[in-house]
Image 1 (cartoon, rainbow, N blue to C red):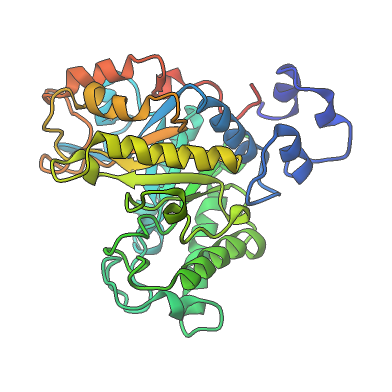
Image 2 (tube, one colour):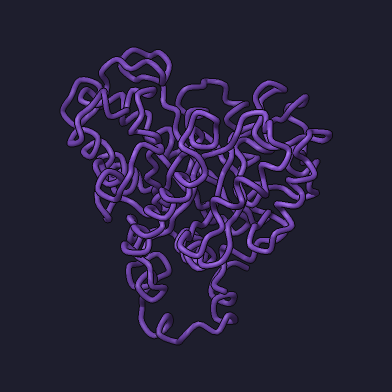
Length: 376
């Protein structure tokens, strides 16, 4: 049972039960010391947020994109992940993509991702969805940087098309159910890496006002018009900022964001600015999240094919474990094939170091997670 009895058993103060307040209410969130973009977020969503916020004080959940969908040399195997093959545990967080909902017409593939998301939740894990959204004006790839944003805002020619795609996301999210018919909480991370020049929502292809208006409309429409109550909304530029002001240049406001993140691959490469840059930028994100009473994360990172056999303990660990860095999770990218992978598979040169990384007390894989959907 995921409701009242579990919460009462945890010894929470009686203030949570002294009124007619429901679990999906501003008062419930206030008593937890949180305030989500959705004041009516479901109980499980609010509790996930609350627990992630507490967890980030001294632990970091490890995540992997599409971890149970496919890996190096396999696809679609049940109960499998390259992470699990190496460490005997799934990652604590699973990354997915709403592009698989809005861009793909294959319902069997969509149903597969529903199943994998549900399985992760039922094991106690966290699910986070980005959105590689194909250009809704031209119908081409998300890398097609033809002008889009101003045409999908309210009153513009393609706003109805945009709302139809948001409806697909809403229907999918609402259909995800746990054993008590509760909606499965999702971290939703739209328009990531918006400070880059590779996606149509990037800063070179829309004004700051257009981007902010798009973000606010997206959250408001999903929340208020489509009734989605199981989203934690994540804001994550790439690495192209050097201070808080630059990080917040396109920030839509505290009422529309729950999680502050950063994607950073480049600084782990030989051409990047190095580990000190990753660390310094994570300190900026952590400080802003603390000031705004939000959670933080390194939302995407990794080194393709992991050429350094000690990358996990000597590079990644050293950038995220710091007294001034408080992040709830770190997520590396997917394992698609032998030329494109971000976690080791069995026999890979970094596999032993990956196991050592998992053994760190403050790094949590799925088998080490505390209950995240109950009050602890």
